[in-house]
Length: 254
Image 1 (cartoon, rainbow, N blue to C red):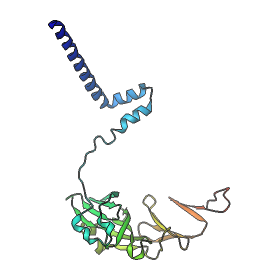
Image 2: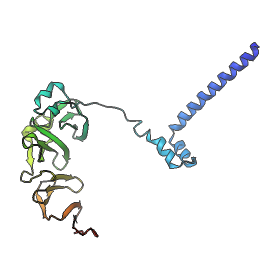
Image 3: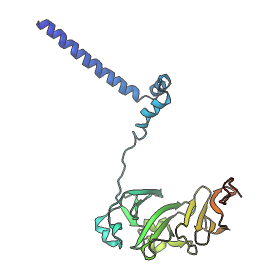
């Protein structure tokens, strides 16, 4: 009986080693690109199964290099608005010239240095400013912030261009300049920055006026006053106007 028990124990150990070897073999094969593609071609699931297996490896080799925190309890008293003093999720991140700009959902925007990994400054130049979006203008190395303010009940968009050099010094309020001051950007008005075509599109909802500016020097290029225009598309050498008429049988273009 002892001999039989020994044989049974040996069989169990053998199966364990075999399973361990199969697991290790599967792990090695899963890290081999050739075998991944081979299994994709031979699998009855086709590309669907390959996508499911590959989706988990998209960020497999990405590691955390540095963590930045836009919230600082010691500086929370600087904000006039209570919701600016609360921690909120980051909704937008922009990187330029060795700096990281992070915009929180609350409207707080902070700049960080990649060299020192420390916060340089806040881009909210006033205590009631709520930053809504960021845009890096590579034509003149400036960061454009689009903000709303409590003094006008957050009803109008205000644009500000700040050179990166002043942000690096921690003094964005000294070098910044307002943009499109003559434009009324009250809701549902808007401003859009097109980096590909080098244009800025604004819409004055009160007067139904679209304007196109040059992103390099902010000079006015086109002014379109037409209440039937519902949308504008900008592409190199082409400005497409989409009109909205009562007759819905067709979409007239100009």
